[in-house]
Length: 85
Length: 160
Image (tube, rainbow over all chains, first blue to last red; front, side, top):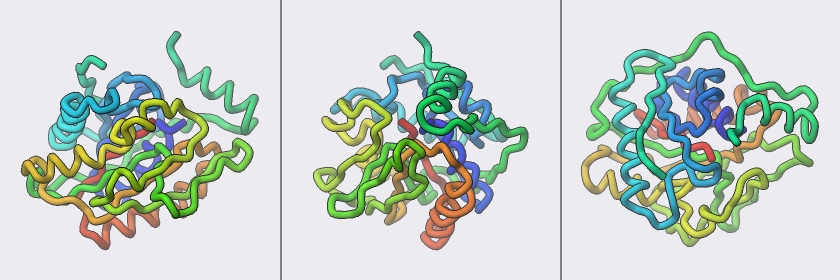
């Protein structure tokens, strides 16, 4: 459900001229809601950025998300981040 | 066992809102990023139900959900943050809020020059929203307006 909510907020922000990138743990929801730019990373629900206190992993996830923001030129693209939990 | 859209949909329809259906969109709004991230102003949005202690918590409205949002200063001390969201496992977020709201990671990447600037205000939704119209028509556009006034270039959305 959170996955849809984030995608819907992203769509509204884009309508108002703000570029977005949405992390997603459920690829099918990201595809259905059609988030403008998405990074698919199937981490456990409740811990989308990685484990607690794992600063290096959380930073890697955020860097991948920011890279996708620059990389994605085609609306609705989902990039799969290959980062182990 | 994979959690699929169909399973979530069936659960929400039987427990919370019989009309619930995941949205299927055919078109997608898109704003090109006109600057490099290292020159741009970024904001963070979580759907993890995070809020500043002392502010009103989110509600669940007996399972229908809550489309409201909370503002959180981007320079907030993480000790001042709390959560309300009954629909995910809080174990990790309780130990480290950055698991769902990576505010400290955003600050570090801004300090390192990876992100140009941070918006003064970040945002939090409680992602369990089974009736989406108020979110789409009222609360998300309000957040968009506030971001525009802060000249935000991009937003990172982190659902739980």
